[in-house]
Amino acid sequence: MAKLSKGKLLDLAHDLYFRLKDESKVIQDLPMRQYHRFEKYTIKPSWYEDLADPEDVMVEIAVVEGPHPMLHYHKESHAVNIILGEPHGVTEPPSMGEIIAGRDVMPTATGYQVFFPEGLPHTFNAPEGEKFYFLSIQSPPLEREGVDDFHWIKSI
Image (cartoon, rainbow, N blue to C red):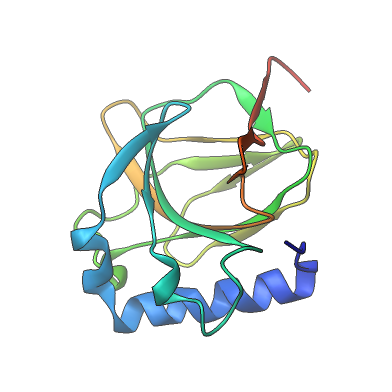
């Protein structure tokens, strides 16, 4: 297992974002699971193994529903998240949610991309009763060999 550089992770995120536009039906057949108050759909490695070694990355679609006031961080993993919309098979447009990264607050919009280095406190919020979807690419994978690199914090 190797950690991809920031540049390689950003390039991979870009490629997968546009691949998902071309193959938007990939979302429809994915099983959903709960993960630390998020719904997640893990994309099968066969969908991206021509671009990256599945040992080095995890590719998921996450759903933010309602407010998530608790910040979290990853000790070892860094990630790129890109907001998804209708061109990606998401039936609902992104809500007027927000991404909080450190002390920065950014609005959600289809195609908006954010890089989270390891250790950066962050969270996602959607208005009550609304949700948005994002593509998440992490390296190394958040969940691997009995490790869960997701850590809650109360404030920054």
